[in-house]
Amino acid sequence: SEDALRQHSAAKHCYQPPWAHLDPPVSTPGRWVYTADFPSEKSFGFFVCNCGREWVSAHAFTTYTQGCQGCETMLLPCCMWLNDHRSGGYAYDEDPEEVDKPHDFGRCEACRRGLCLSSRHYR
Image (cartoon, rainbow, N blue to C red; front, top):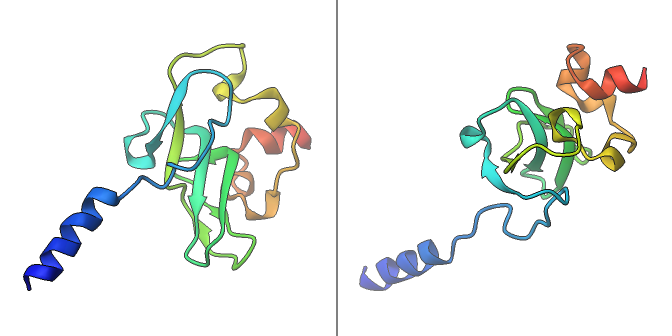
């Protein structure tokens, strides 16, 4: 119907990307991009689960999943933080404060495969 078409068009224009409400994870310039558009392998990632949980991880990979703490579903990040330039000398643009936060090894596929830098940092 014409009314349904009008509602659909209005909804399309109201759509915001999943990261619209997120603050930058670091103080260096950059932006959130969809994981498919991320040109590297590792950065901060934003995860959205069907159970309603959302989280940001400093140890997100484009090809490795993390488990939701609410329902244990394994997910790839929906978007990744793309730094405009590297600064501070931290590998993979990690914020030094984020590196010191606890890491959920059991829900990190990259840790289980021995590829996550966090697993090497803490063990």
